[in-house]
Length: 400
Ligand SMILES: Cc1cc2nc3c(=O)[nH]c(=O)nc-3n(C[C@H](O)[C@H](O)[C@H](O)COP(=O)(O)OP(=O)(O)OC[C@H]3O[C@@H](n4cnc5c(N)ncnc54)[C@H](O)[C@@H]3O)c2cc1C
Image (cartoon, rainbow, N blue to C red):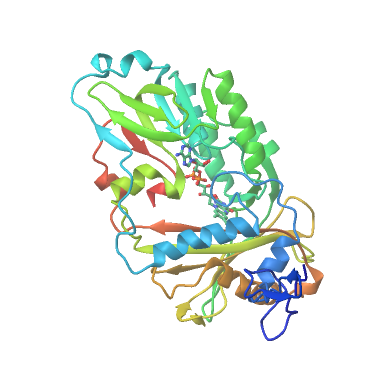
């Protein structure tokens, strides 16, 4: 078999696509494939050159190019013209009467005061409630692990967790990868304001969540990892959780902490398109010589065209714990989801040009360690006003 491939030329590359035609020659059959596909983007080339072994569940926990493409597909479907993307699956249902008299009662596997669905931020409230003496379980569809990519956070916020008995001071020291001051806020032609102690710590979610896991278990909490919420039945006396893997749990309260793609929130919001979305892309890279301060928010330009859309970019930057020259930089923007809205990959294409200018470095002097991305859907009407079920509460990103 002979395979002909077009070399990179006028935006057509050697990357394989389906065969365009076949040709027979003599008795031997030869397949001649002309393959046409756009050249890989700069983002694809950068991302495919990085190792992404430490991906986890939760917002910003995936670093691979394939995961970026999957997220962009979800984002594109949100941007489609329809107000309701698709009728959401019914996850929560109410039943009259008490659970103990229902046919499911004999299949019940375990009983809790509180079950928290989704473990990233969920583990903090689970631990707080366990410390108060409640029997708490967590259901997490992946392994319950924090991402490698640090969160920037204020020490004051962590101290609030110390006050409620979730963390102690030693935990903060162990999980803090880097501290930095002062912190800048700046807008084009409006000057800069420098503050102290605002988002001034880089905390390792991997370390923090590992510490929380140990604490929760020592308090008698139960963590069901690799289990996915399938449906929730609300009875007069209890909420009943059915897991995709077949287990049944009963609880006095269920806390939904399943993030932006929570099936419960999808149902409550009737699959409605978000009113606004914050798109974020960024990286953690090495090679920043000036690396002691941070940007809480910084915008150096007004709106610009990306494809058919107009966006204004905002920046955030802070030193990373992996090395003295390592720095995290995020570029984010706010859009109304519509077909012309830019994809995350398009934003990343801009980011590779703009980030070095913003940081006063040359791209060639940087070594990219990790590429990060995500989006946050938001709605005008508060989830609190919409929640129509008893025995349920909501926490984390999904409440936006
Ligand atoms: C690129 C990026 C950078 C960020 N940087 C920062 C930062 O520097 N500082 C900061 O404070 N914040 C940052 N954030 C935000 C932060 O990551 C989120 O606010 C945080 O992860 C929200 O946690 P959550 O638990 O609400 O949701 P998620 O992190 O989305 O976690 C939801 C959890 O629910 C689980 N789950 C989902 N469906 C099911 C199901 N059916 N059954 C069981 N479990 C389920 C998921 O596996 C996941 O573990 C960033 C976000 C992104 C995308």
